[in-house]
Image (cartoon, rainbow, N blue to C red; front, side, top):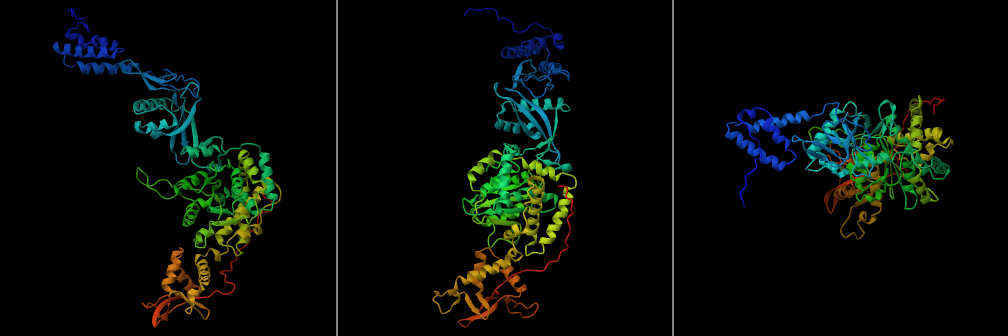
Length: 632
């Protein structure tokens, strides 16, 4: 290899030159060639040290910092220039065209993200004051702009912003910090100019008597893509006249349950304004009776009735049911196909959970408690069996109107009706709410509610069922006047076959009836002369039934009844025979000793039911007259 004179990479400098910008400028001017620049930096540092200047690297970093500050563009600087951008924003040093880039401290162009991305709105929840940003992005040249609403905290964290990759935004672990800085700068530079959108996180009543989703200047503050999709299903679609024809056929038809389904749907927004608790209306019957189509009819008042859209099934978790109920809030909560739940005890749990009108208390990750979600609505469900069982709690019975279709098909052509409802829906909800918002309507409905309630409470109907039934009647009267104008509103006589009496909601009274039937179905166990393989439960004698206490406890516990609660009730009702030795005596038991083979054995001794056993009580309430001139 021939020798040749080496070409110097850096200029010739004296010591005093390092106190000027000359050597640093030479390095900076070579920023386009990173390899060459790094070699020059090393040689310049070594040369500076050799002539007695030991602070070269500190001076070089200060020079770069100065260049970076000089490169910053003030508020009057460049703007975003994305094709088809929804807004124009000041973007400082960033270049925003078909992608987002910036110039680094070396003057080199660095890619921030490979496609257009920008904040387009500030979103503020008017109830919780939570702040979010709506961001817009366009991934491909042929794609249109897409928009999602994102928590501010997600955009402020390099770890969390990577989650936007699920929405097809090109953010990853390499560019996450760059994207966070970029979005933060755009928001801060344009904070006052970004449009501000008011939002809420549920449907139904909000401030100033407004009702979601029928408010133009307020949007839904979606907590998940699924709930956001449900919100988009709640809008008029198709032909209103087709829907009205279906509804009129129902109101003119023979099926009272079908009319109740419509009334239950209209009752949903009345629950809150009339100060009532959520309640169930459960429709059940054999397959093919049209119960799912009836549920779809109720749903179509407000939105897309297709199961899996606005209507849900019982296959979800309890948490998902809470989130769905909180989203609906004051529009009907709808569940199809009860039979998908295998554990019948779960029915009561779901009833109690949803009729409480509030989510379960839970701790927040950052400490304290999460804000409880709330709702006040009708809950309309279907299944091939009743949701109330013989061992259901009294509270569950009181909160549920169980409607059996009674073998009468809801529709002659159920499939055609279902297809029509899937294409024509959402027209009547806005009209019904508009009638509620008319001046004087709410006060008139409250008076009407008091009048109907005061009349129904005198009947043998459980008190909470009176409340639910009254809501149905009031809602149907308003729908009749404001929507259908056919003078065919439901009456108490229509509802009465489906309402529970006061005795039917007493779990201990139902336990007594069930126990008497259970014992009657096993007569050999009460006949000591019969061949029972040694198993005798007790005996009948002088108008009483004697049941071995151990057998009694096992029978009740195995069928989800409480032996202790039942015996206390039987004692209060004076149908229990037991030994009483005086107040405070430790021998006091709610049992009677019966000698079996010469040994005393405790038995539960109950009076046999009379031919007509009821638990009716007398109630007296004043009748409140409704005004004759109703505004609707």
